[in-house]
Image (tube, rainbow, N blue to C red):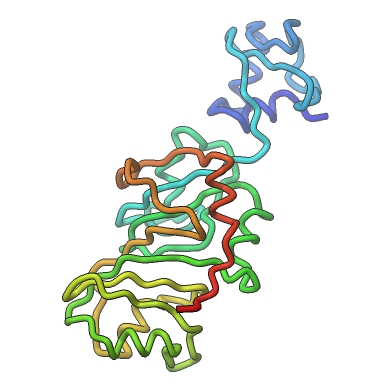
Length: 239
């Protein structure tokens, strides 16, 4: 059982004070009956909430796919810089969303936002070996030496990376598949070959690919099948 003002606030862009005004104006109903107090408690699994004559769709957890543009940091809040949550705030501002993993400020592409900690752990846990694929552009030609080095596991200053796949897609471009997420990992790996990463875009997590019809800065909720694709594959590198 939860307070109706809390539920409506979490499931919409109404603040708690907004809900109190709606209740006072007799615009909130539960199972067709007018609610008289904003602290009225209901069962979200059974009761039907109506606000301004519209039934409220109650979602216990939210899962969003975002095509992250440049210029946004992967954080829940920041006083100086825009965060990925600022992009979705107009629709989900009252939910405690957070980014699953991180992309650098100048990195674009697939990002998952959720308020489900267990789901996030299922993707981020090192034991899961979750596969992530990136399109990369560097400032010098991509070589077979780089591809073999990635396959063997690049030795960074502080640690050795797990084996990864570097697929050459053009003179200066490649597709990189990782199963870990060290700090600035792809940039540091190419740096070992005196290469600078110019463009970096994540295009896949697990079996889920960034939707081709989702433009930069756009987002939507994931379907049940898409959630399974995000979680379902154990991306062990075996090529």
